[in-house]
Length: 125
Image (tube, rainbow, N blue to C red; front, top):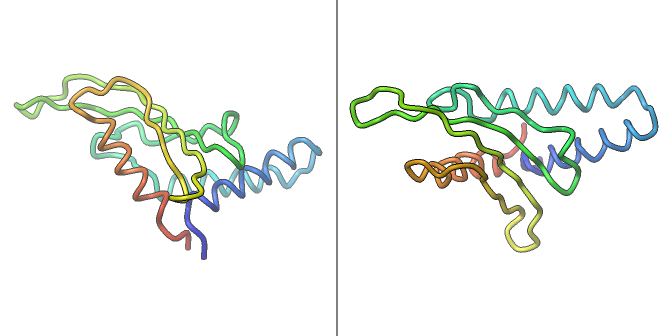
């Protein structure tokens, strides 16, 4: 078995090669990527708009996700959104490293990094 980040990187690489060669199998790779993202990545519990995989910006060497976080205040009321990109790059030492962009309201970037790291490191079944 392979980790989710590894499987997504392999599928992105294959997708890019198929697109370049006008191979119709590109659609199969795209659907596999969508299925993995839908089945594993944050959706709900603050990630109310879910997670979107950016196939145009991703490759076998870089994975790019977009997400939003719906923040709550101390009183339990929603008080705004922050928009984020999660960029995953290979690391020879750790397997992958990631960077979260966007505003760090309530230190949300650390939480997003933690959530995505946990998902990316899972075995893809």
